[in-house]
Image (cartoon, rainbow, N blue to C red; front, side, top):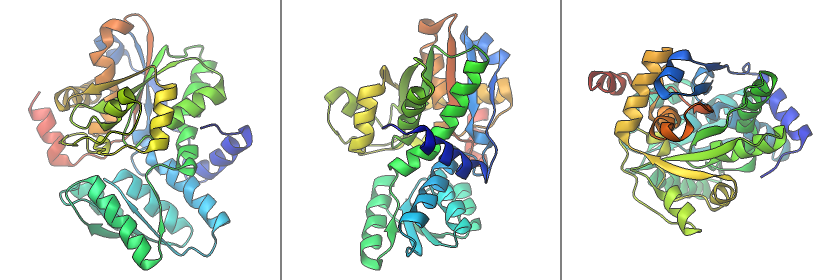
Length: 323
């Protein structure tokens, strides 16, 4: 997936009309912990607390221009995508319905409701919620917003462009960047930004060891479904990959690795201790991967995406307590 300079510039205007660029910092304690320089891109600092904010804005902007008669959109989420859609829909005066699985994050649900979306709980996992959203879209004539689409990736790409361009100016481009993989928009965006910025940083996709569909599919060369049982990294709980996202992952990833919930919990604690930043499970997965692979990257420069910080208080309290 490639974007023209004009498309990138247009996406930046759309995103920056709502939020400023997020920061990236090289944290000394993380460097000490891993034995390499670590640049963290803080997408936990967006108004929705996650990188998904950007994709919702660019998707809805394109939708209003291309299909101005649409008045009601629907999508499925574990939370961050839903907040993005809620914010973007409200800016354009559209109604939004979001389907989440039963047992979803209480605080993410509350945040979506506060944005004015109609929240529906259905099924036991993301896949069931997504299937129900598609069925409702067909029955009620609603516009279905998928979890992976070119317009979503375009918005997400803006954060990776910020990251690479900043580090080019600092003459500190990372040797490798670890990118969490949920449904694939984050990784596809990183690959597009790498091409746009003309850098040769290695890209490593990171999945949950308890939701290995993208890793299994990457190895197999075609879409392979797998159970999703992660408790902590709900943003990575994919059971069936998107074929287009998988094609990008197979073409652009130097490697795809899996991190356990225990490794994710360790990374959440490390981010809090070393940077005083709050990360949800998926938001800490990149650091978990960098920690797991630290022996290979000693003395190098490593980039991580802190892709979200929307973790329920009781969940984070337990993570800290179990240290």
